[in-house]
Image (cartoon, rainbow, N blue to C red):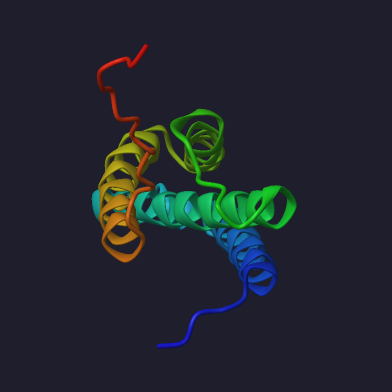
Length: 132
């Protein structure tokens, strides 16, 4: 499966984020009507989290360089905040479900990231005897 360039991925994930948010607002009443629909609303919120995190990180990579990595603060917390607010607009139980599914999604995103891109290694300095 081919990957998209960073700029295209930023646009696509932003568009999917907007579509997911609009769909959640459009179907607010059905998503808050029953137990399974509330779980579906939380799941859609977690998808919003993944799309928002992807869009934010791709935007930062485009502006700050290829080796930039998303951190817990502000990227992950901002994307989580966006997803939780959107889920809260649907139903208050959707917030809890969204948080749980988003944490699971973040765990798997982190696993995929570490398996495909090794962590940078800090240079080591060799300490030896001083020669006078």
